[in-house]
Length: 105
Image (tube, rainbow, N blue to C red; front, side):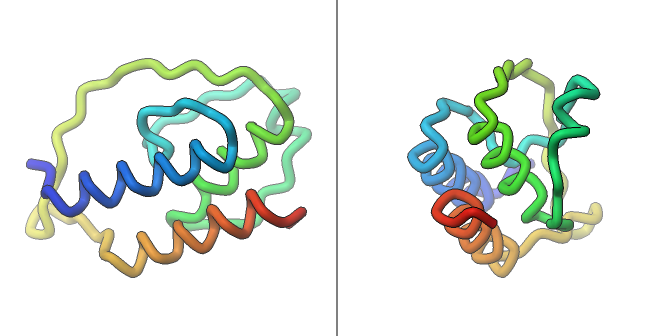
């Protein structure tokens, strides 16, 4: 079950990220990411937790590497099942979107 507010927050963050990266992703906070070795060797990543998705998306967009989205099946968890994300993580992701797209961080 995906909670409405989590879905809405994800859509807002993805749209804002797309605006600043000039990408057209359907889900910036996607779980699975696959890269060629050459791409990963060229990246210096700093973030952990939920800032990672934002940072890597911004750096891939800046490097002009091609991105392919592949659909997956997803069944969201609730807090009783181990979901840990809160609104604070959304605020941190928003900060990272600004940080990695508007600066040379």
